[in-house]
Amino acid sequence: MQALKHFARIQTHAFTQDIFDGIQHFPECGGIGVFIGTVRNHHEGKAVQALKYTAYAPVAEKMIRQIEQDIQQKYGVSYVRVIHRIGALDIGETAIIAIAYAAHRREAFQACEEAVERVKHEVPVWKEEFYCDGTSQYVEGCCIRQDLDQSLDQDKHHSNSHRHKHELCHDKAHQ
Image 1 (cartoon, rainbow, N blue to C red):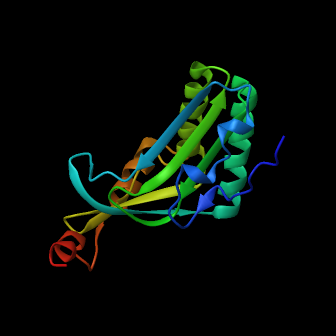
Image 2: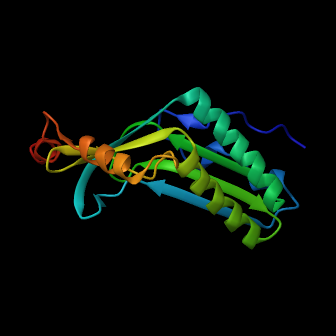
């Protein structure tokens, strides 16, 4: 068997599916599960201009690799990889790709879905959305602690929303 590619799971630059090992290296596999998450232009009724992901990369990298191993064992799949982008991203840019190769489609889909969910909720990657009204907010549900009570969550939710000096949508409209 050919050696597998080595690549960082946390990336600062745009990436595509080409970064992953090809399924031809896994002749026992007949199914590929893929999820490509991109930046959308809205969230909870607000127009989104862009977003920014930040992470503690050394820990995030280690945790993603552990999640990949856990899922590979749980579903008996041959290959699971997840890559997450950090930094500023515009609408339509790829933020995350998860891929799983398995003998059958069900296991490939399940492994891929669980990989995305676990990375989203367990790995220290934070998403800040920048809205067209000039405000921004960190999105809840991205690597949040389960041991905080509701009142702290509410206070945090309100304190993270603030005005920015730059009117992102206004600036884009005049370019």
